[in-house]
Amino acid sequence: MAITTAVQRGSFVYLYNEHGRVICSLPAGSAPNDGLKGYTGSSVSIQRGPFIYVYDENGRQMQSIPAK
Image (cartoon, rainbow, N blue to C red; front, side, top):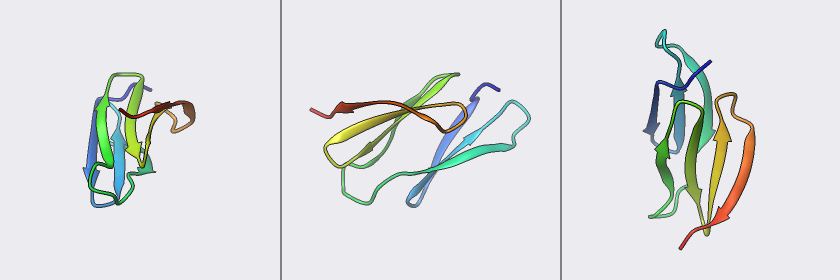
């Protein structure tokens, strides 16, 4: 299922499908720069601490990238 929307509420990021149902929720972190950085139909990027984590539409981590 594709990601149609990603929304951060508090310390979690919620991914929604085309039917408006929650696909999964992911931790967003709590530091000032932490949280949702962006999303596409197939991935979401979330910064936690010094890294940006990229997850697929099922909530599985695909990679981690040092944040600049």
